[in-house]
Length: 181
Image (cartoon, rainbow, N blue to C red; front, side, top):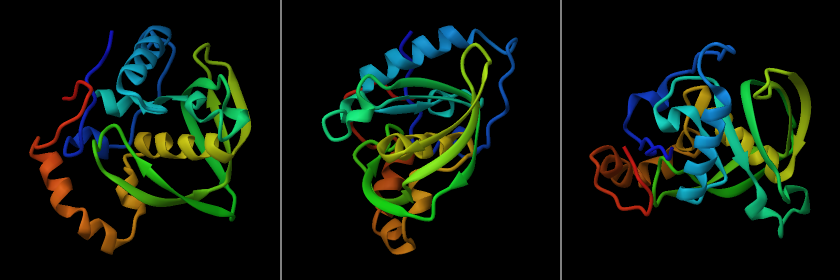
């Protein structure tokens, strides 16, 4: 099933998400559906709030960045109940967009490496360090399950400059190539 993407203005994007338990839902099916949705929309990450589900679950597919970062080749993964507990002091800014913000991009500064505890879709626990572009996309998706969006991480001046575009998104005045809600 391909889900419609929730667009900026929907309150689900601003709520911290609830933990997922093995009996909450069929997490394997959700993973398959979210990867189909992500492929259809042409993104590199998707969090459950972006499809209207207030649960601590997100997926990443960094394979489109394999040419820029060989560590991203065939890198597709799902994360359950993730918790980033360490951020490197070293940061870098990249131009960032979001499927929930069609047509809006801004430079965002994020840590170059992170340490995170999470469960996989078999509910096996992992503790791992992520660096480079993988760390970048994971931080973006992690923000979603914490009730944050990428525009929270830009300067107040830049946010003010985007105010009109953000209001148009909230009013449903936008165009994009994928199904939205």
